[in-house]
Image (cartoon, rainbow over all chains, first blue to last red; front, top):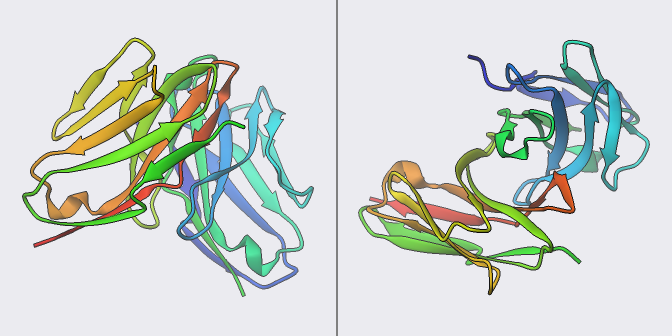
Amino acid sequence: DAGVTQSPTHLIKTRGQQVTLRCSPKSGHDTVSWYQQALGQGPQFIFQYYEEEERQRGNFPDRFSGHQFPNYSSELNVNALLLGDSALYLCASSPEGMNYGYTFGSGTRLTVV
Amino acid sequence: KNQVEQSPQSLIILEGKNCTLQCNYTVSPFSNLRWYKQDTGRGPVSLTIMTFSENTKSNGRYTATLDADTKQSSLHITASQLSDSASYICVVISSYNTDKLIFGTGTRLQVFP
């Protein structure tokens, strides 16, 4: 039973570019959350998707957007990249209404140069 | 404001020694508390999940305690191993919003031979 899968594992982009990160939730999970973790910091909540809709959002600008597909997989899009967007981006999935089942992926390391 | 504070920020111990990490929170109303282990550049992995009624929970050499009255938790690591070197993050979930994890900033543990 695969856990949460994220791709790519590493990515280097130039300032101003756009990036798309992908996440496949654990089997049986239908809720996907995205987090940004800067080096040496705790994860910061970006947003959460359920039933293909954004259900909650953290304090991130509109440059950060997402999508959830009918198979529960999700994408995180970041436009007009800034140097400060360099971070580890984590995806976590859980079964709806069962937060005990929160499972994290290994993350995508994004470097903006 | 819901907060989770951890101490110490960093810790260095010798292999085979025990150590205890602390977590204090102000999150209310409380639902559950989790300890995660995060290796550098990887996603967090759950060690324990504790609800209001649980005082102690063990997972191998890891033992977590919870005092819901004083809003404190600790993670005790017994007979440390080199592979225990990682960041340990305390996460609290409020029953008011069970979809959002409130992260502490973590304790960076280094185990030396």
